[in-house]
Each structure stands twice: as structure tokens, then as C-alpha cells.
Image (cartoon, rainbow, N blue to C red; front, side, top):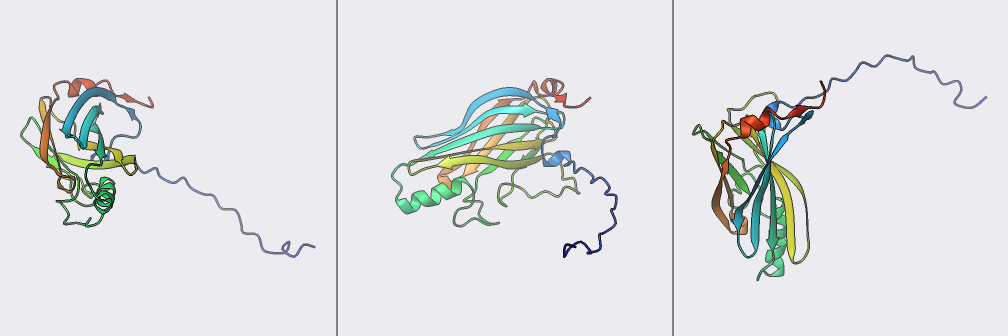
Length: 205
């Protein structure tokens, strides 16, 4: 007899299904929806060493996601200064913290109905509770990937705006004082957002 053969065997138990967590709409795009995509293609900020662009808007039934990208080129920065800038691009550099508004990348939006929203200064954006609906509108910065070297660093991310804004002009603002980018803005033509939202498709019938 094998040494382990006489160990007591537990009775099999039925395992119930784990409920699927469905994030509330203010926290991000629907997970089961194919958005309509609208081209934007505007420079939110551009200088010889800094570029911040808004590529497109993904329009969902519950909100819209602005696709962003930024590239920082090395100028006359010392190795120490470049290391700090490099880290700041990914929001984990020296001085980061809940009071570092002058260091972090911040975004804001002004809507056609004269309401506005902005991201927070805690990490990538405002901390949101999935159990408590925030006051609309809400703007959340969601970081993406990136890469860098001794001469250039680039990264991407998106802004989730909830709920879907009313049709009209949308003013998108940014500030990144840690990289020398003072408050800047662009105007986005949002006249077709509601029509685009009608083209969003659910994955499942």
C-alpha cells in the first residue's frame, strides 16, 4: 500500500458560479460593445521637444473614450534631469503624490451644456468608487503602455468621459507643468457624437 493511500478523501462539493463583475458606466467603456470611431487628429500641445496628441474618439452608448499619445524628445537636459522626465512620463517619478498637481499630467473637459470635469492628481486619475455614482460628468485618465531610451520616450493613454456628452463643441484641456507644458486646449467637434453612439454595436444579441 502506498503511504498516501489511506489518507481521508474530502467529499466532493458543488461549486456555484462566481458572479461576473460588471464595472459601472462611470468607471470605463462597456466591455461588450464595439464603439464607433471618430477621427480627431489634433495636437493638444506641440513644441520642438514635446508632443501631446488626440488621435480619435471611441463613441459608446454610455460615454466616449479619447485616444491619446505623447512623445518627449531629449533636448539639453542633463542625465539627472532626463531620468526625472523619463520617469514622469509614466507617472512614477520623484515627487509624485496626492499634492503633486504641478508634476502630473492633468486633463479637463468643458461641454456644450456648460458643465465641466477634470481628472484628479492621484496616480493616473481620479479615484472612483464602483458603488457610488459620481456627479456627472466624470472624466477618468486611463494609462496605456510606453517605451523610452536615452533620447526619446513615448506613451499612450485614454480619457473616459461619462456620460456621453450632448452634441456640440467640446473643449479638451491639458497641463503637465513637470514637463514644461502649461495649460493648453483644443476644440473638438462633437456634433456627431449621438449619431455615432447609435452605431455602437453590442457583442451579444
